Image (cartoon, rainbow, N blue to C red; front, side, top):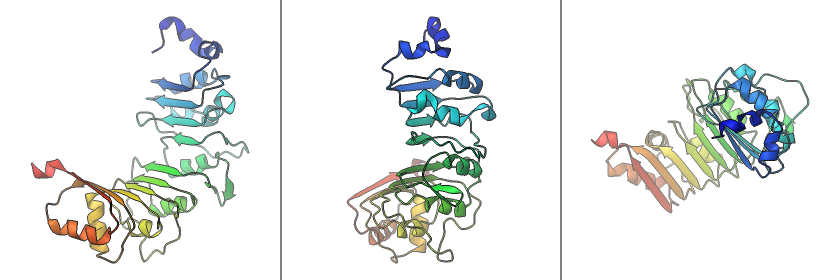
Length: 277
């Protein structure tokens, strides 16, 4: 909290004088129009690299992401909007300006189109209409609604060849949960080491695309679907497996699991307590 007598200094250049050694700034419960004014005052903090925006309210059209990305004379490398903040739109922009300073970004977007427009602001080698993200290694995607057809997800993943950690929490109306034998494998993830899937989906394609996967976190429903569709036909080198929301007390499923995940060093099963009360 900032004392009342210092509030006037929030919107002046004195902020950099008052906090010359500031490295991380948390902004909480701002409205969009106030945030835009405040960003202008973050101008010359030599050590400030992290901006954490929490509980942002207001109109998403009032937010200029380019202004936020360029704040503090382009020194910011990590920017995050928490899940309590409004969802933002990114309009298509023909301006050539990009922001190589941004290394880590957490943001709530309104639609897939907004993601495509956002990626154009991150400088990489241009591939089709979306950047090929050569240096992106961690990706976390959470969908708020049924707006993610899996062909769009596949198209995105194949543009991230160096991906090491992938977390998916998606809602979709697609009948096919992931590309299968009727939809040929069109991407490879040779560097992917960690995969976290928070909803039910068919894992075969992702596992086949990720020969060096070490750690897998999935729900019970996801595991059951995978085993039912791939009985002993796929063996993986995964060493760490976490299965949560487990709702089965039959030992046969554990035996099936061991037949597929033959290299396990660590197995964690998290029970869904509500099913056993």
